[in-house]
Amino acid sequence: MTKIKVSAPARIHMGILNPTPGIGDRLYASVGVGIAEPRTVVEVEPADELRVSGLSADECRSFVTRILDHYKLNGAKIDVRSVPPRHAGLGSTTQLSLSIATGITKAYGLDVRPVELARVLGRGKQSATGTYAFQQGGFIVEGGWGDNTTFPPLLFNYDLPEDWSFLIVIPESRSFDETQELEVFEKLPTPQEKLVYEACYRILLGMAPAVVEKNIRAFGVNLTKLQEVVGAMFSEAQGGVFQPHSAPLIEKLREMGAIGVGQSSWGPAVYALFDPERRETIERVLKEEILYGDSIKESGGTMYGVSEWGEVYFTQADNKGAVINAVK
Image (cartoon, rainbow, N blue to C red; front, side):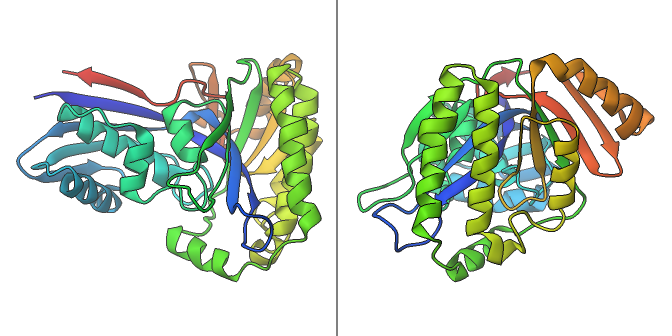
């Protein structure tokens, strides 16, 4: 029998472009970035029954059962080694469910694409950036739902430069779970058309060409503008352009000299983009002024630590997607 290890990137969710029916023929559509840390790590092997251990074990059972039933498989032994903070805006549910589903199918010798697994799992209903971050990473723009859509199509995918640094802060508070999120979407007021149009402009003529041209300042300016526009569309549901736990942290990130800032999904996780020339300065500030000294860990180009703001990751984009290996 084959044991499979899956290590999947988190994702920064930078916004949904058309959150309610009433404007145009397509609903939702979103933009985001695969991020190197934090990661979801699971190990899976075939078994005669279902056994789940490790982090978020109880939540995993519904994912596992759906995959086993759909593909008519006997069982699986699953160990969840690592998972990002749940309901914090980093896509942990999608990454966890796809990691488990991929591990199970690979362990049984099945070759199933992440998009198909996402359909089986019921992911991608409002956003598919997490699925594409798992599948291939990088900067992602997906096209949402239209009359003939079976899963949101990938419109644009491009590697981010490795020296573009993201500072991610995850406060202790938590946001909506999946059930609450569906209820919120049902109650959202239709946004002004100009907000939807500007959101599309900021991506098509702002962020996407900036990625191709490696223009970090143009990317950051348009990212921040996009966050303000998307935040205005969701302000009634989250209590402002940014939710209350996120807004003060975003101001702190601006004060640190960020090129671009934002709230990931519903938050409370926030992020900032920094010029490569300031990386050493930001690392020094984190070590000397922000992070608790005994919490600091550095590995693979990422600095991690805990502060009065919450958990902090200073990292870069993930341009590969999930790493899948057979292990002994």
